[in-house]
Image 1 (cartoon, rainbow, N blue to C red):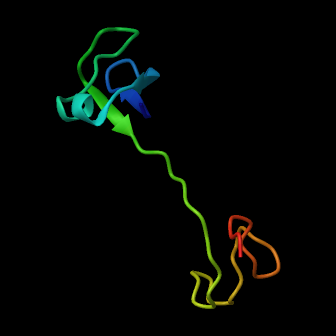
Image 2: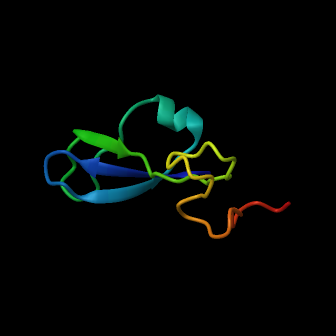
Length: 75
């Protein structure tokens, strides 16, 4: 099952929940520290780049990879 990060909006405690998609559809999870149900799911920013010449910096090079090759590209 996937792990999800939540932050309590009352005490600002960040905690991790392991839940199925079915459980996620039921709603928020209470804070494990204070018990508040005023929690918000945190979305982790992750991703990868694939240099195509039309990247954000318009130089043709990926800002996180060297030599126009993505470190996650298996080609």
